[in-house]
Image 1 (cartoon, rainbow, N blue to C red):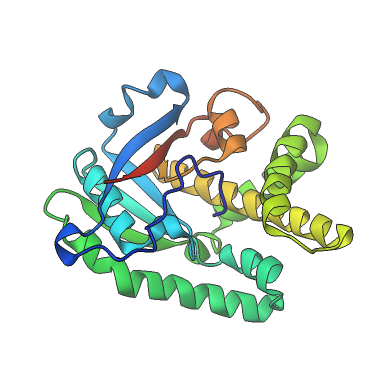
Image 2 (image 1 turned 90 degrees about the horizontal axis):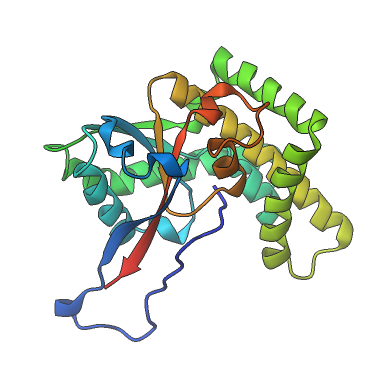
Length: 249
């Protein structure tokens, strides 16, 4: 899940003594819509979006977020972005679609295998369950939402511009040396990524998960939650988006 990261902190190159291991504190960056800033915790269910191969999901940072969640929600679904990560692998590594999907699914399994124990440490407070994007994408509901979003994307200029601009900003920073044609191809792939991702979010909202948590921001998704893009599916318009930031300490 590429995103505009609201707080990008890196571990210093110098090695700290074991007794001073770096830690992170999870805080709220912003909430969309703003009217839910002080009420979103009244919901018992949420879902946490996981982007594969993203520095915000290193174990030490995941532990901080899981601890934060465990103090606020009784149930949390952990959404692992496996199948949609294939699009990132195609655009950044040049993998062909079958290879990209195989690698994306492998990375999803690897994330769960390597970090499930972190969630287990807090199960006395919160019921954490894992779900993969690949699982959600097999449902009829996903297909319906995806068609609706693609139609809206092709018909509404404001929605198109918002989604496309997000991808353009991202690839302008991460596509050094790419030709103009290749840059445009990557931007189109980013739009495909977000439309698939948004359809998945619709499915989770339909399943009773009203609050989305993510360490970063989705400008278009926040706009929808704030009341813009009225033609978007109701499930997205009713979703509460909580952008988190990770502060090193």
